[in-house]
Amino acid sequence: MADMRGGKAASSSTEDKEPQVEVRFVTKMDKYRVTDAPIMLPTRLQRTGLNEVVNLLLELEETPRDFDFIHEGALLRSPLARELEKYGKTGETAVVLEYFEA
Image (cartoon, one colour):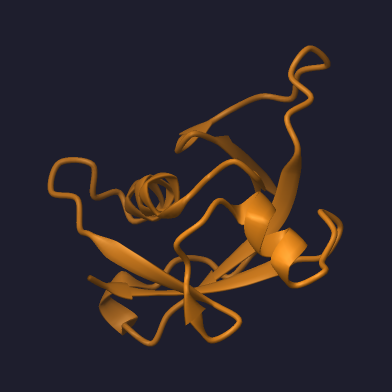
C-alpha cells in the first residue's frame, strides 16, 4: 500500500505520526483512471491536496487537471478527518472517493 503525504510519496517515519486513512480513488472516466489499490493519506487533506495526489498518480504534473471528489454521495468540502467524524468512521475504515473533472 502506498504512503502519500501532501501529494508526495513519503517513507515511513516514527517521528511523523500524523493521522492517516486508507483511501481508494474511483472514477467513471476511463481517461483519468488510477489504481483502485488503497493509498494511505493524511486525514488533514482536503480537495486541493486530494487533487494533487490524483494528478501525481496520473503523472499530470506538467498539465494538471482540476478534479472534484464525492464521498458518501456528497461533494467533499472539508478535510478527510471531518468526513470520517461526520459519517462515524474510523481511520481504520477505507474511504472511497469518486473523482471527476471540475
